Length: 84
Image (cartoon, rainbow, N blue to C red):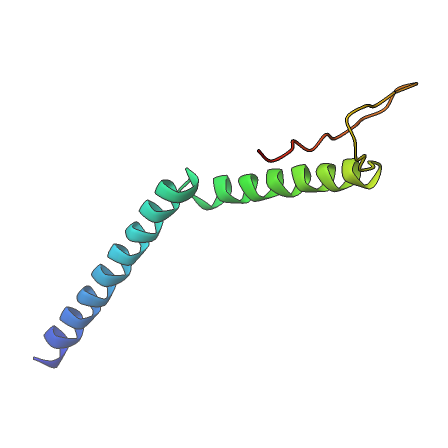
């Protein structure tokens, strides 16, 4: 009888874990559009690279107040839109 009870508890535990895992996969798919570990890792690495590029671009940028800009030579400029 104890073996049956232990097996039942094990099966219930495994079912619970499986339900939790599928719930987490569904949440990942709904929130970020990926559901497996490799896709999530690739997504995070891509975002890290994009963020590093953004920081590098902003490091070489300046903020200009006003409505006229004169550019001589190759430059990259970020223009912040004014809030209406």
